[in-house]
Length: 113
Image (cartoon, rainbow, N blue to C red; front, side, top):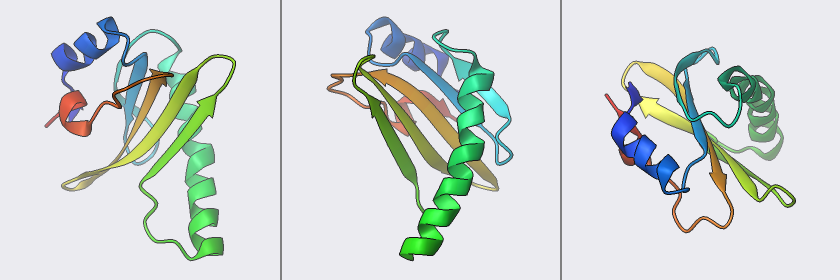
């Protein structure tokens, strides 16, 4: 799986996406697009959230947390972290989008097999 560079590039040019990174099950970068931040720094979020998701699921008896979203006020950004179900792979998509954003990029728009 990788980014659809045409669609993702269009979203960046239109200001609807700042950056995105696709990570494997170990948090390693498979693909990245955009140049707002070092993709390695975006992938570092994976490890903290993996532990957070495990604790959240255990403490609140939740099953299969699929997505987290964080908003900043002063920078007007949203960080969205999604589990991406893929046949035979455990992937995570980390997206950085501006606020307000009338459009959250979909997996279909960003990724291709």
